[in-house]
Length: 398
Ligand code: PLP
Image (cartoon, rainbow, N blue to C red; front, side, top):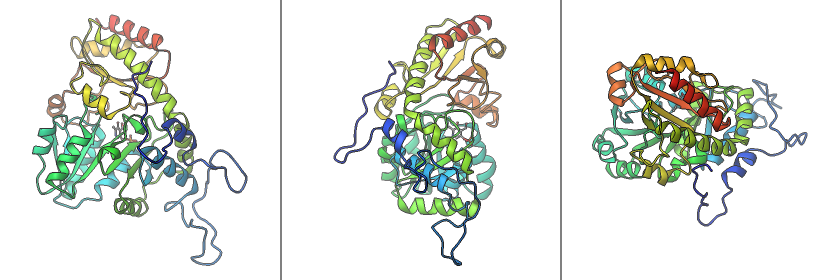
């Protein structure tokens, strides 16, 4: 059985369970034809009866009916008032940074996706934002970094690639006590709204790379920003149109289709990842396994508190050196070596030279991203086949 907890409903008003929301959120028969699946509106513009007299759609950068459906589904899943879809996860993050102003200080978790680090350091620092990377898995350390100039706290939990866990409720509460108008933004890509709802823990903004589990089939690039605060939502909407990094209608449709099976897939990802993590943690050729579902994980109890399942990502440190890691990758037969994650197929990634290469070597090492770290996106195949492949590759790596 997957290590998921029983789903709890919010008190009072009847809230649909995630599996139901996945199938039905944003899905209503097309008023024109009754089509059950969302029509894909391939159009850039819309006829107006008279100048300014239209049906709510003027131009597809601003609004497109297929994108509307996706945004409704995403907002419902995350428990947000509104969601804005973007052309990639990084485009979604970029829109969030545009809420800030030169001189603003941002406290960021130390372990995070390399592309996010690059966007912060190589792009936004040129425009006066000041990022400080700290170990947010330690609430005291995170809060000690917050000053009156801190405008945002950026958390990725579970983090990429070390699956470290930050206590969202504790850091949010502490941060808001220090700076009441601070914005807390959580990258919820690894957990998905099925396993973790940061807005319920007090966060202001959630971002996703929908490229990953939400899309689920490794066939699109997309992102989203969700918030329960109308004034932030209004600003993000403005930026979505003004800067224009929007997804096309076909990509929106594919993400919508992916969402239908998100709850089902996450259950299987969790079960398979737990089996893989257990197998690796018993293996002689493995030094350490990072999986929040393992009781030995340093923040297992916090993960258990804020997540309803531990996700499909497992990282591990292989015994030996970089050559051994390279031999492991070369020996894999079923699991594909590749970037990205969250698709139905299992992928193995070498963060040192792939997803995290854009982080300076010293900082990578400091965060624990070394030449022997291997990250697995555990897919929905039969777990016995995955374990057999991992065991033979570990044998071949010796
Ligand atoms: N956030 C996390 C945790 C990621 O892993 C990634 C990409 O790997 C992103 C954001 C960026 O998303 P995208 O590749 O869709 O731009």
